[in-house]
Image 1 (cartoon, rainbow, N blue to C red):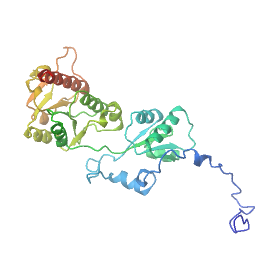
Image 2 (image 1 turned 90 degrees about the horizontal axis):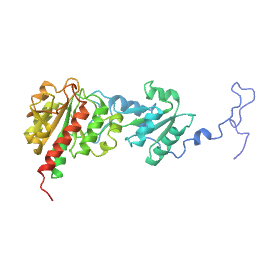
Image 3 (image 1 turned 180 degrees about the vertical axis):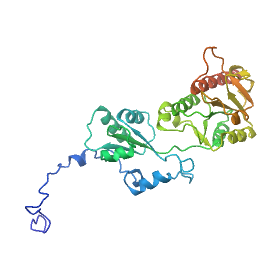
Image 4 (image 1 turned 90 degrees about the vertical axis):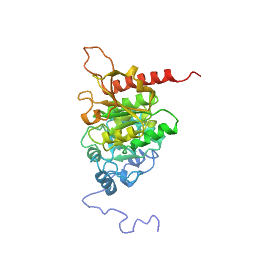
Length: 324
């Protein structure tokens, strides 16, 4: 019978070691109520499905596991109140927001919960020990954002994008650029000057992390980034498809602004600030071009150099377009 207090187990017997306990009145349970749908099992730390995915790589729509061949983690975690709120403001793709139990709710925490709710992002209340494990011991201040693996395009997809738009192909390739902020800045320049995408090598290169996505200022949502198993072979394939490969180097034989190939379908290749273009990639270039700079400046940042070169190419192409 309902309310029958004589039912065995309905009351704690007096004198037990644990004694009576006071509940929270539902406050802990209701603190995050209605903030988003319950995440899938593979998005919940501590669940066997989560451990299986993070250890082996999350399957992608193409059937391959992201990170399985390169050894990179299938997910990324942004930790800390400022980094998390900035990532949410920039609409960095995310799969779940993790919030520590009994967190002190300052303005950043409130904004994170609000932004997550607006995006329908699952919000998980987790013990701090679990957050420590999720972030690898990095300072998280009670907030962590789980970012799914980036869905890279194939290098040939970038050429197809130009063909579909009936435009002269302009693709950027990065050789040995390892700072994700440089990659994000390049993606932003590619969007600004109407290029068709970015190619990065699978190894020894920056990937589309949350940091790269933030630096792109939203351009990453419009510009595809392709990953090549072997950059030199990818450039060879694009050359066979009719594109010219132009490498950037301070010792180049031609200035980018007067480059005759600027009006042709082309791939613009930028090397790292320190080492420049690798030998094997340089051998695939039809032309090595330079950006004229003052003699007391040794080199330009990779993203700055790429932005200047894209502007120069865009100016040459604009001058060649028939007046409307």
